[in-house]
Length: 117
Length: 112
Image (cartoon, chains in turn green, blue):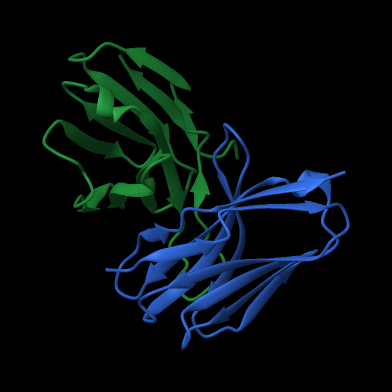
């Protein structure tokens, strides 16, 4: 398996523009997570899905952020309109549902480095 | 709310030294704890996962321990190598919640 695939790797945009980040989880994984990483705040959970259904979106900063998972192999995180404070690395991660085992590890994509000017 | 703290924030050691990274968490009702490695510009790679019922896990030169009652975990790296240079993060899954809460990491540099 190719692992969790994110695109684009880098995104530079101007304030006010719409940004869409994409993620393909590992096949067979039931959970998909979106995290954001900054120097100041570290890794923060934005939202996660179980079997394509959003479970916890309490980490989504505000209404400008939205996430979808139309099927088991694809998810998007959209920011509209973008602001300079949204600049960060956005990670997608997936994991299988293997309760009570050490196979419940979280697998991360390489991230999208977002810069909003 | 679960808070995860890692000390030290940065560590530099000569090659061959054994070292310990520390992680503490505030809510002892954890389901499991994972240690990750992050290389610059890359995603995170899971190194070890310890279930709440376990005391330790080992993988090669890495050994992670868990003491739920005191809210602490340690990652022991034996015979460190320059290739171990990276940021190490611990993350806790709380019982009843699927997502992980991450510490801010320890940036390790192993000098040749």
